[in-house]
Image (cartoon, rainbow, N blue to C red):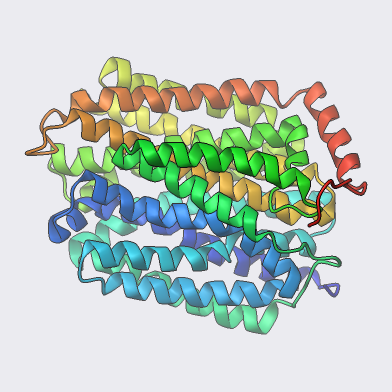
Amino acid sequence: MPELSPRRRLLVLAICCMSLLIVSLDNTVLNVALPSMRRELHADVAGMQWTIDAYTLVLASLLMLAGSTADRIGRRKIFMAGLVLFTAGSLLCSLAPNLEMLIAFRMVQAVGGSMLNPVAMSIITNTFTEPRARARAIGVWGGVVGISMAAGPLVGGVLTDSVGWRSIFWINLPVGLAALLLTLRYVPESRAPRPRRVDPVGQLLIVVLLGSLTYAIIETDLVCAIAAALALLALLLYEPRRAEPLIDLRFFRSAPFSGATVIAVCAFAALGGFLFVNTLYLQDVRGLSALHAGLYMLPMAALTFVCAPLSGRLVGSRGPRLPLLIAGVTMTASGVLFAAFEAETSTPLLFTGYILFGLGFGMVNAPITDTAVSGMPRAQAGVAAAVASTSRQIGQTLGVAVIGAVLAAGVSPASHTDGFVDASRPAWWVIAGCGLSVLLVGAATSGAWARSTAERTARRLEEPQPVSASS
């Protein structure tokens, strides 16, 4: 990539953040519209789970493939193809005549989305080569997630109440088209000096693993659970035998990287479950409109918006430990408030739980990205970022699947609002457990010992990898 002026680099960062905004905003906007979609499309809880999980599942399955393909044939080409697919998928979603077509079009969206975030992160990594400037850029990137959290519930509520749930997909159209034109004009093409080879077997195993696991949880299917376990075993046996695997298992010898992966899964599982439970509770149990439900969740979103850039600055100045500890404590406290103290029964307690969760989630995102990318050689940064992004999507997929399954098991088949509050207690304990995992794993993988494992791993990644089978 040619050397760019400071102004051009900031413009590239802004364009990349536009893509993150529409991908991140899509789910937070969608959650507020779930009850309206359920009524119009005559869907049950499982149907609502699939409208979210079909998207995050495909996204998680293809992120690493998209990142490696971009390194090979050109990051700008793949980024632009992603913008076209995501924008077209959004238009199709707004026209979906039934639940099945909506889920299919959400998968089209996800194929496009998989070409955006990891590729954008790779563009940023190669645009901001100086470590401090890169850390600031990643902080801005993390802040955009906060913006999407803050804007999503409110924008979704306004659009759903005033125009209808289909309009939530329209907001992606102008942003996607603007990002496409700006990319064509201002983002230079770049490729990896030595792109990684395609790993079709590894890619297929990931699709089988994630798809079978999600289906097994939502539909309580034992055969799919067995298929997921076998796919995981095959992946662990096959990938180390390749010269250039889709997932380089050596990454996980770094305690900070492994910790960031686990934390991403737990934090985003908590987020997926939190949004899913609260959206259904506020609209179906409390009887709020989509707009009022969005306003109720605004304290959570606002705290995420405020704390995300603050977390980025803390990571840059003091490292990831403090933000991770704050995130773990506050997310756990939020889950316990609902699980043990019935925060739904008291509006002040309800808002306290929202504020605590928003503070925690705002703190957790920047350490995940920074820890995953900063300890790796520059040539591996894009792959490391793709693994972190995949972990986020896996977490959100599993969060919605598990929480939805818990709710579906506890509510009345005749009306999913009967017994909803009691059925949500185990769900809130799951969310509290995710927060506790963030705390414990963050504490264990952010000290001096953990940093030493990251340094050793970085050195090993720069050495040729011995292989025992042909790639």
